Image (tube, rainbow, N blue to C red; front, side):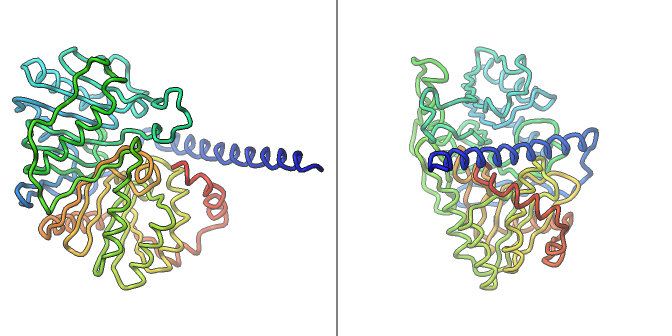
Length: 414
């Protein structure tokens, strides 16, 4: 056999294997979707909204969607000058309509309202819902953003951010999308902030808007301007992943904090598909005596991600990391707290898409009072978890081991 034929055979084998892996992934997703039909998540423990002073402002933490939506809608209804609203998913259901109606009413009374939503995440939402009043300035981030530059990897990131800024006075940030199911059926985390940090979030919205306004709206669309400079708050930092500029500081933020940890690392994520360096950092922390706990869904809404993520469990459990699985409902929070001093809340999951692919935004806070709030939230979530032990993991059946190994090459896609 010639070298050319050998290369051709190798390519065909590789493509065939990839096709089979994708087929298995699709089949698992379809079976899981069928099993979930008609099933409603059970009640789960939540904490009341809690507010603490941080720096020159306040931070309120939400762990139940209905509480969050009530305060977001109240802020929109009370807006006098400007509303900046950005979301990944915006369902066309009761909650989605409440937000659309409130934003439209604000624009009709003279408030400057800008909205951004992701086209891919809302492809199944009714086109009727996505028709907006001309009084709103709405940007639909496109499903295909590369244009003819299909080779440019900087243009493939989704806009996964969830953000609301009202009148330069208050801002909301976290994992909650907009929809009725998220109001009561999902466990997520969001924060409301006031003070200097609001300006950083406004700047984050404006930068994304201005980067895309001419191609997504009209070439004559005026930029969204930041009128005055903000103050610096040494306790709060806003980190933004910007694929277009090839900057991904959220991963670096996590690694720096994990590598400095001396007491505890309590991390909650909806999807856990880190790179090997991230896994090594968590394992190294546990081996040096740090209390490392990872809280994630027992069964997430993406079963393929669940199967693939399990490939990391062996190394982590062997190092002493505790893996806690939230039962009966989807936990979608993206949070961590370390050593009673450091904490983060935001939109980035611990996976490749969030840490090295999508537009994301996370709040980093260095403050013992806020860290204490996040520790209380974590302990409350622990009461609804099943812990995975090393012996239990080792004893899983061969079918599970084979499926995990077979799907492992798909990790770079997630």
